[in-house]
Length: 136
Image 1: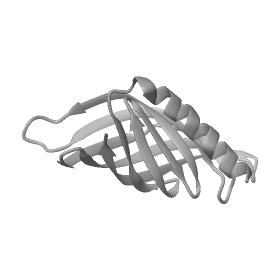
Image 2 (image 1 turned 180 degrees about the vertical axis):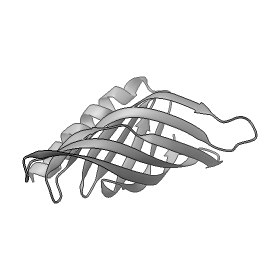
Image 3 (image 1 turned 45 degrees about the horizontal axis):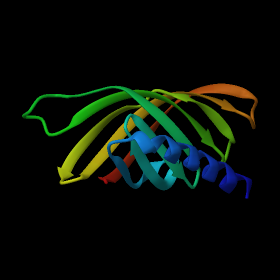
């Protein structure tokens, strides 16, 4: 119940920031387990069955008109309640591929620094995410 309450509060906070957004994207993916992905302007959010994450995209661009995908770099945080009960910061490096009107696929790798409560230590790692979103 505690995990659900934390997830609902975080989602409500992210939705409150979306009121000024030009477009919001929602979809499904794998990041902190399988779950719901959302993007509001430069904020990527994810709530999954293993945890929650949020990233601010501070740099994005394209490779040119002849390359069909875009890149982005962000900074964010995560909380993993499944397993080691860890939380930390991460640096997502990703690609988005628009494939139909209002649809895109994204993939990212995220080097991270996590504090593992179970072992009372810090650990460097790399995680990956993959998902699909629809823009409203």
